[in-house]
Amino acid sequence: MPTFCGDLIDLTDVPVLLKRLDFSCTEDQMAGYLTFLRDCHGGKLPLEVGIASLGVADDAREVMRVHIHALDRDRDGFVDEFEFKATVQLCLLHDPSLAKVNFNKFVEEADTDKDGKVSIAEATEWFCEHGQNLKM
Image (cartoon, rainbow, N blue to C red; front, side, top):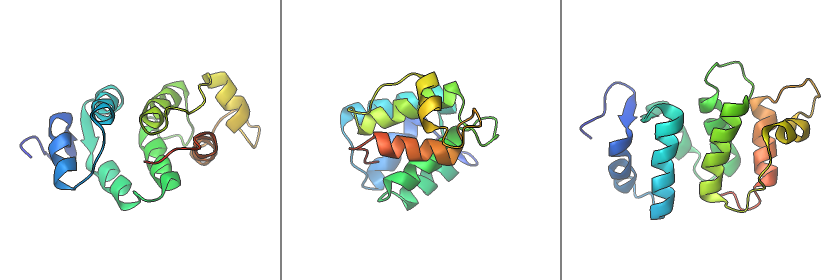
């Protein structure tokens, strides 16, 4: 992969990487992955996210946790509106039937300890419960 540098893989190499790993997805999903990487990860796939995702590929809940954690840009352990929208974008690639809710409704439903914030664990539970067909 010509763009591999340090711990990042450029989005232009992602299709080649996934093909070499015998990972199958639809053309629409691939386009969505590339858009997701461009919009949410600056056009780079962090190697740790890619490897962690592949390592738990058969467990949708764990894949979801890996991605929500990776999207926690400020590393505060909570999901803000940008992080929520990015996670929804990824989930819709795998489960178009995912209920569409706004961020405030998400916080209301997912904040089980009622502290006004949604932790990564709470978000993971919410997304897994609301994505009946979620297969990563």
